[in-house]
Length: 265
Image (cartoon, rainbow, N blue to C red):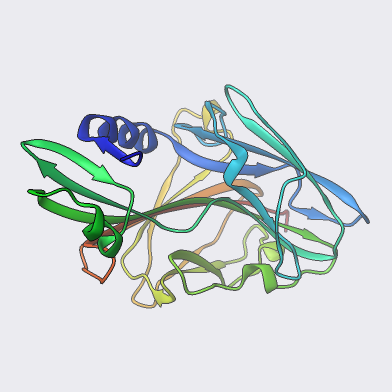
């Protein structure tokens, strides 16, 4: 099978993904011109906004203010970071997303060797070889987000879809200002994701003796709040895990990052 991998290969991929945080960084967060362009850097790194590993831009997309999704008009993958450009022809709020829908993989054992099939429980049941044991299906999702607004903000591109791990922007990103409270809500399949640990970091930690990262946690309604004391660019990273079984998976794991900018008061 083309989508069958050994446990050793899976472990290698998992270590690579866990070692670095995926983020996107737009050149601008708020724009006032007409038919303006946006450039976006994409990287995976241990230190916030210090480019380390270039990431394929194949899964990078831009949701327009009218809700339509587009691929970037041009992109380039480098060794330390990748870059993409697109012309913003509509007035309103755009969502930049690197990632995609949830993916499923089924791990199993045959003659003592661990392998996997890229399929959910239903599909995997038709592909599993005879004698397969220790069968477990996982659902995984990883995406990096940023929001850009041209002139008047709107919310069409930001509306949660009720599918997978999502961020509900209670406070519109165009209104993030130092000394004002920012609120978000984390959702899993449209339901509040309670008790999710969220790490928050700020730009320029390379030049500080202490990184100054903060740990936040969603409440029973999946909400979290942060009041920035300084203007600048920030990153939040949220990780979700669940052992709840569904018709398609035995467990779920998802990560989400958001790059955002806080303006001067």
